[in-house]
Amino acid sequence: MEQIFEKLFGILSIIFTIISIVLLFLVIFFITKESVLIFQEVKFFDFITGLTWNPLAGEPTVGILPMILATFYVSMVAVLISLPIGIGCALELAALENERLKGFFTSILAVLAGIPSVIYGFIGLLVVVKFLERTFRLAAGESILSGGIVLAVMVLPYIVSSVAETTEKSYEKYKETSLALGVSKSYMLRALILPNAKGAILTSMILAFSRAMGETMAVMMVMGNSPILPKLLGKGETIPALIALEIGTAGLGSLHYHALFSSGFVLMMFLIFLNALFYLIKKNLTEHLE
Amino acid sequence: MKHHLILKDLSFAIGDTEILKKVNLTIPHNKILAVIGPSGCGKTTLLRTLNRLSDEEKQARVSGEILFKGKSIHQIPLAKLRKDIGLVFQQPTPFPMSIYNNLAYALKYHGVRGKGNLDTIIEAKLRLCGLYEEVKDQLTMSALKLSGGQQQRLSIARSLCVEPEVLLMDEPCSSLDIHNTKIIEDLIVKLSQHYTIVIVTHNLQQARRIADCTAFFLGGKLIEMNNTEGFFTNPQEEETKQYLQGLFG
Image 1: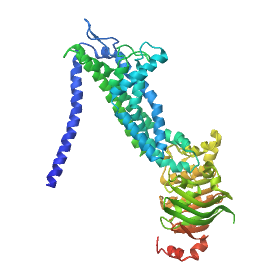
Image 2: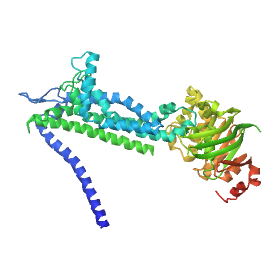
Image 3: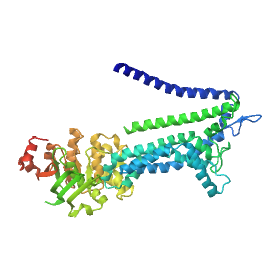
Image 4: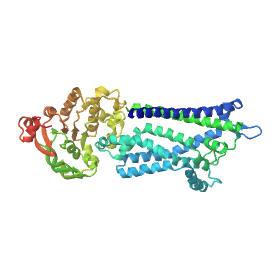
């Protein structure tokens, strides 16, 4: 009986593993299949460098450069805002000796990561957008900057946890050796722990960047969604927002429909590339550490 | 004999566990004192109370007094105390940075500025520890790539960089082979011309080979201390005799 159970368990876990791998390939396959059709009518190069998005005009044009740029722009703003805060948090967490306080902060970060993105969008609309309108006297505060600020809060937990993983370990390992040399804890954080976390910081940046690129709802709510070339204080539309907003109204099989799939395909390619980069750097780092 | 550190009724406990019990000990100037005793007798804790690293433990309680050059160590600023009383750990712990930066790390904190000054001190300490010829062309190499014995000599050089007067060593050879142990032992003897050295060791032969004085601890108490020759040839206390005969360990 025990043996049969063992076997069954083994077979089941193999099946489930295969299912998840197959699922990934199915997603890639399906998106690619729906995307390539459009390239019979529009050149791929024109598609990703075209400046106008007007798939419903008499003579439809589908160029997604503004959306690609907006996606990168808003993600970059988010990472730039989030990174210093995240690194500071990770250093502080590493040096925190009070276990209860440490647990408290860690759980706060977990809660932050667990808040639904629509709520972030909502708060962004109420707070960030309003704030930008007042500060910069804008007609509308929906902008790349507001998207970046909202996203910064959303990716913060990822940055903190992936940097803290390294800083906590090295703080534990080198604390006594460093203290025995008479140096202060803050010097240790600055001169030893921070430089040693360079790799982790880089990987956390990539991780946060790819999270930010794929985020849809919150960004959509605070960015104004105009398919124009993005400016920091102007409106912009990311690829996920474009797809989410238009896929419902695009006629099945139409150029519009396939163009949306293609933009999804482009986004997916960027993300796969970033993930590969993330994986490579991480692997390199672990080998380096050993 | 000049005394460098004097312990008066030193007790140390973590929570309810007493680790050191009323230890009275004088540590002679520029000599090697070996501290021996079975595991858990408080040897390592003794070292850690001397540079107050033990204060970092939660629920640590210290009573009694430690005088460093006649002054209570609690009246000396922590950074100064730990600069003056260095500690080399059992496991070599090079920082994950270049050999050069390992040595410059504490120097910069303690206010040594200018590449010329740093270079001079670093070269001198590497030479002192017999490491300079081996690594002079690789100072920018990661210290993690050094062999175990080299790492431990680097750790010693790093402690020496900030010019301590006392060097505490916690079983510095326990993770090294015979060859590297010999190198470190010779180094320790050489260093004792300029530094007061307290070395905790499990290895009775090592104590006998290098130490000027030897102290025996058991259950957190100092049982006996004497010059090494007298200690090994003519132990006074019954416990010491039994320990030296290997009746317990």
